[in-house]
Amino acid sequence: ELKVEQNPLFLSMQEGKNYTIYCNYSTTSDRLYWYRQDPGKSLESLFVLLSNGAVKQEGRLMASLDTKARLSTLHITAAVHDLSATYFCAVGDDKIIFGKGTRLHILP
Amino acid sequence: EPEVTQTPSHQVTQMGQEVILRCVPISNHLYFYWYRQILGQKVEFLVSFYNNEISEKSEIFDDQFSVERPDGSNFTLKIRSTKLEDSAMYFCASSYRDSYQPQHFGDGTRLSIL
Image (cartoon, each protein chain N blue to C red):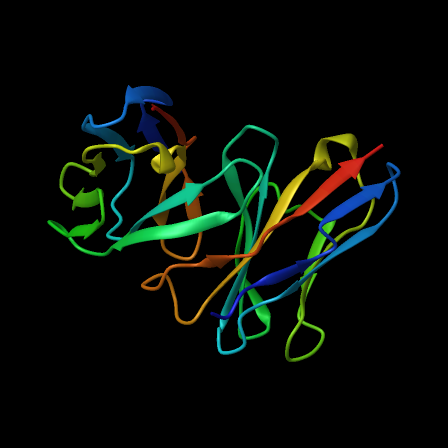
């Protein structure tokens, strides 16, 4: 069964710093998603990565996919407080499996 | 921007009662999903639905659960006899095509079983 593991699960960082969230998954899939969730809110789609080597960027967030390593990364550049949220990666075709989420807390 | 809408936002039900959660997906979307999220935990896939039938379901989606698209706009999740452990946030999602497009999530229904 497909397993999706994220690390770290909790990250507290200072504004202005860079950091990376990692997402490993257990079976071959060329479809990987990143979502953001604010407390008590719904999930907002950030990126859909569809092929090996895919890289997408939006503002201070950049996501990449290595299907051979079964690894995706979400890189945060010069973090700002507004990026504080929980970030989920999810993998799959028709049945999407989510990781446990990375709770990101950015200190002003 | 079109949205997925879910009603009610909060449902409180006695254990053993039936509950129906309602969703209106984005109008030109063809794929529909239900997920649940127990407080503070990860999002769990329940079921996917396409062309008026279930295309995939998880182990959680047992005989107590059913889904229906009763008309051209609504998509419902029914839990026949609720248990305490069914307490969670239930999210509906839809997408235009298959998984090459992101799923758009509704705001969720918080289900509390007493």
